[in-house]
Image 1 (cartoon, one colour):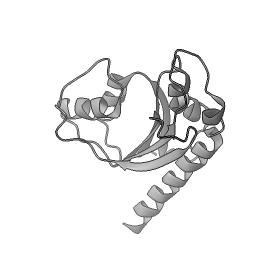
Image 2 (cartoon, helix red, strand yellow):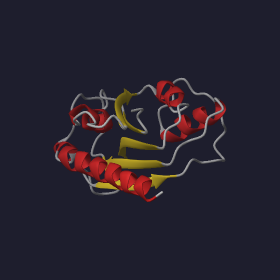
Image 3 (cartoon, one colour):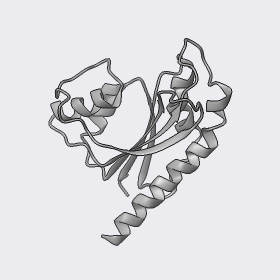
Image 4 (cartoon, helix red, strand yellow):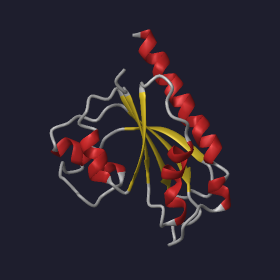
Length: 158
C-alpha cells in the first residue's frame, strides 16, 4: 500500500527546543498499515518540498512553535498555505511558509496540512530539549496519533 499521509518532523537539533519535531518522529513507532510515512526532515526544507510533489492526502508537520507564555504547551492547528508568499525555491529555508512556496514553485499543490506544535522555552545553541518541551514528547506522539485517526475517519466517510 502506498503511503497517503506524510508525518514530517522539522527543526534544528542544534538549537535546543527547535529539535522538537525530529525528536517526536524519532520516537514514533513505524506505521503498521503502510498508509503513513514518518520522516525526520530536520532542516532539509528542499527535501520536504520535493517529497510533497508526490500525491499525499494529508501532511502532518511536527514542529516547535514560538513561546506564547507556556513552554511545553502543544498546539494542533490546520495550516493554510499563504498564497501571498512568493512561490520561490529557497534551498535553505525550513519554515513551513518557505516549504509551501517551494512546492508551488515546483508546480505542486499542498495537501491539507495539520501542524502539531510545541511552544519552546529556548532555541539557543544547545543539543537537547528543555524540561518542559521534553515532557511534551509523549503527549505530542498521542496528538499525532489522534490527527491520523481523524484523517482515517474522514477518509472512511468519503
